[in-house]
Image (cartoon, rainbow, N blue to C red):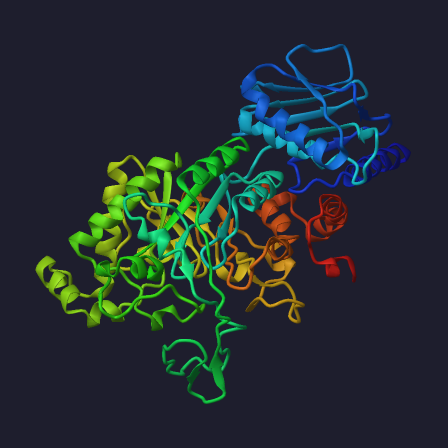
Length: 554
């Protein structure tokens, strides 16, 4: 009995010691030495890399030290006898993809990974072992970690159409993803509210489509007004009922990324083992493109303009005409986009295409009759299939919002399930890859609190709801579950106009998202996560990141 009690006591101490290591997302396995002085990083410490392929991880860590601790280390391939951080690759470390082992002792730190990305992820764990205050000597506790990701796709989205963010902030945003071991950045580059990428063959896309003459003030008339017939007019539009007024601020807003800037962002992300997936919206959410080139719309004489209000886009004519000249235009655009982005994946949107505009268009109806397309739902499928065939011919794969299932799923497409899980489940059951991104669980533009202290989309998404989301639906069997590629958080920028607001909406919900994507299901515990989050907040204070301090109070 005494032996049992003693063993239990040792186990409890070990667990408590490990619990003091506050890494997010939580590693698969972590143990902490009961005694040991730890490893001290100081001006004499060297970062040792076995070859230049590991330099990205070393440089990232060094830049972090320099920025937040004013400490810069030497990077070398020559290993000293002590006081070094070793980065090395070894595929035999684990059978899991992108796995790493981490060991810190008094004389050195060792990070060994199965890939360059794995070693980079080990460095992110090292960063979270650093003190949360600036010191001349940085003590790293003695720990051993074995870690690997649960999902291959760990994504985060940013909408730059509704509000434009410059290249410097896009890089900062990518660093946030890197720190959370994410590996895909979904760049929402086009929508009704602005076209943000230079297309050399069609300069008016940025000359005209990248700029709008105002933005809506406040929220769109809300709950209880769902059945109102809104009249679309310029500023200060009066609509029924008389007390519902849509106002815009009349301030010109816009911007775009040159192709050189896009290449710069792609390179920056690649150095952090992040793939940038561009989104070019079609067939709807296309008002900015149609403002520039109205001949590709269903009513070229209607006076298209870049949208100034959010929501209710089905009330606007914003769909492409499914004609050969339109497809030629879109193929030209996609050709330039695919030449820029090394990504295997191109997101083509496919969501919220109101069929009313195709139904009203005599030319569209003529096209449908000629091609034997029975209705507008089938036309949506025809449109997506046409684009997919072209993208596939260039060796690429399309991703689309779950509306691409309407009328029949394109054969090689990846479904991003946002209207709940239904679309993702349907796709997984026919053996097609799925990214789970349900609005009610992973849309980080929704309010964090019922009574939020800033303007946000009028829906509620608390931290606990994000954390407790499980991307693999119970309805799927083991074979079908393998088609859940991963999960993604989305940040739509209707009410997010500056970097500080982006940070406030992201943190700490991005931390919860990262644990969904990376940590093993059986490792998750919300109370434990909240405890680890306290240290993460101190790190955010060090980094100057804006977040809600309401999570620090009961």
